[in-house]
Image (tube, rainbow, N blue to C red; front, side, top):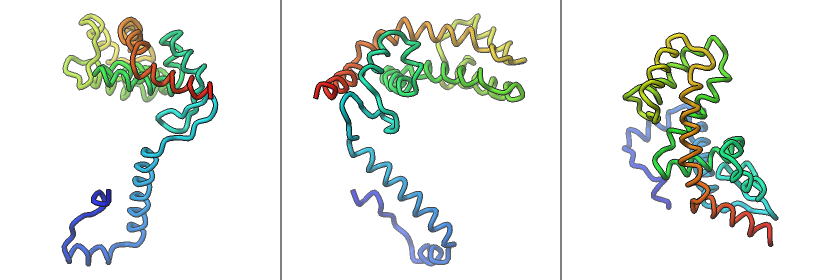
Length: 197
């Protein structure tokens, strides 16, 4: 696809480019090279061995046992980075990925240093909780109101009630559909078929 790398320049732009710092030129060339490498890596299927499969991030190996454990509980699915990414992909297909994003943001928030709590709490509230939030999660009015009060003087547990509600929603609603989904079964079948080879 050579047309992806072509652009139009005027003669004055060419002269300006020739005068440009060689460092900037090297940085741009390197950035372009990294982008091309990422693009090409996306086209090349990963090399798989025995009962292992690369995840979408291409740096974590999955075994059939790992994927089977995901079916035991939502907790086990969310315990691994790869499980989180796979579940997020599924939720995106259902247009409900704000739930996992909120849950992960709350997990990260709990690890935040005390002096940074206010800023993070405000960001999470604005992105997921307030009534006109861009990625509003499905929580009831009382919990939304309670969180709004807690964000004024945040603690590490400010979002616990809302996070628990979203977790239960995912566990009862999205997680069973994930286990029945084509995404999960394709992944499981692929890893198991590689194991049998």
